[in-house]
Length: 180
Image 1 (spheres, rainbow, N blue to C red):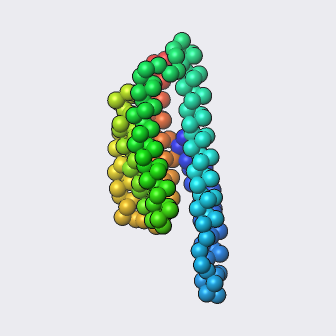
Image 2 (cartoon, rainbow, N blue to C red):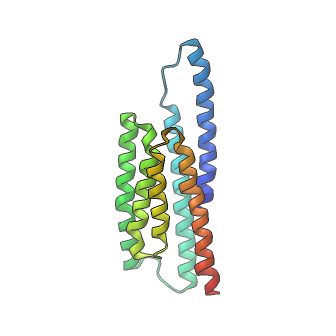
Image 3 (tube, rainbow, N blue to C red):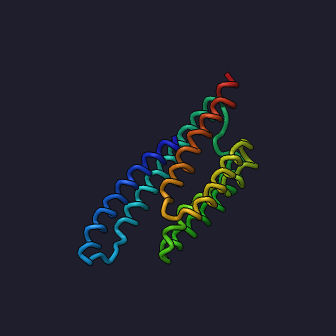
């Protein structure tokens, strides 16, 4: 579901960017464009909604599965998982906000992909080892995206959308279906 939310969020972000591009084009022709941070706020809101939905869905589905299996959702391993995931993720998020503040907008997508990948690799020692491959894929994609700075939204859609859908499908086949 996180991948689906990411693709929907990317679509909304693309719509916002398209509006800005059209306005900029008209204003540049008249020599009036001076820039605006309104689009940044809208994009951050879209990202926050996607993140909220992905986390909420993850918690709900994890709780259901834990109850079904008669397990506790937050045991020592789960707490270690969350801590090991959040350290690189929060660091990358703060770094991305600093990049935005300093005007390095083009590097926000690569940085978030790289730090998310690092978070997945770091957390993989406390969960299914397969998640490290999702992490490696996002790290590599983030590094590649540093060479195509104007296309960050597309790399985000691939990393947070397509990669999660593929990963979720593979995990369903490997873990859920084989357990039945």
